[in-house]
Length: 385
Ligand SMILES: Cc1ncc(COP(=O)(O)O)c(C=O)c1O
Image 1 (cartoon, rainbow, N blue to C red):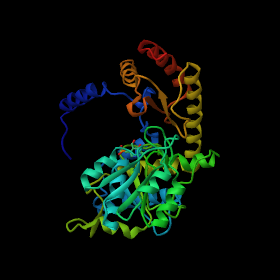
Image 2 (image 1 turned 120 degrees about the vertical axis):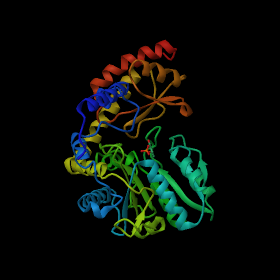
Image 3 (image 1 turned 90 degrees about the vertical axis):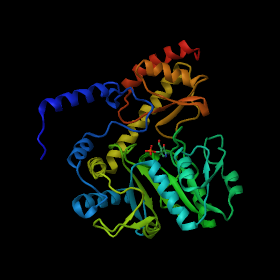
């Protein structure tokens, strides 16, 4: 064990602290524009406990590997994945989407991908990385994939179709059941990006919200990505890519001679077990019932926020499907900048001329009561109101 020079340590930690003071914190409640969250307290403890684990070399950490298997079993149950399926732990939605398209390309030997205009920008990365061509489909008035336009683009060079179950900008859900049927009939790989919605939609359905089915109960769904560091209420970085057929993983595996397992699948080599232990601990702590209550409370705050915004004369781009909303603005960039100067973080969605608010679990009605007068004043200063 290395000897620690106490004075040196103190100086370095003080320096770190000074940088950290410039950051925004979820605990302040002032971050209204992020799909990440202040992690559940148990996640923080579990993360620290597993700091030195490496799931890239699983035989060194058989216990942590067991946690990973148990966590994947939890996700599999949540998403009704079949017995034939496998889960691949990823760093988040970006890696989930890249990995899914890597599989689709390997299986189909094709490179064209159909996706809605609302798809996350990570698809641009994978197009560049893997030399894939994106065919973007314009959206309906509900900001979801236009099925009629999508059908026109289907031909025998398509490697995959993407459906978004909880869009980044508005939380909108594509018509996943219809897309699944089309892909199944046409034998096309269908990836559902539920990075945000994966931990929301199952519970919205239980709470009797009118949202479509989106998981493996739909025969056409090939892969689905879901992030624990978003509505899974856990630490960054953690997502899971669920894959309908475990053997598809072979298409993205290589031999890994000098470590303890013969083959390694996916992008990463060395990777920490800490976020996996954290996500598992939250899943165990909350269970499906806990997540359902969390989603119920986020939706309650979402409806309250919508009302408060409308009361001051602002309107939404569209009725929120989940705890994400776009508030129409003529000059969203100016609003975002001014709010940031006042200590509040929201997002500028220039494309839809709105600011985005994400009502994550740490946002309460009390915080919204603090935020609304600041937003109103800012809108008046910029000439929005
Ligand atoms: C729908 C969707 N997919 C993918 C991503 C990318 O996730 P990450 O930034 O965790 O890689 C996001 C991020 O917000 C997202 O909203």
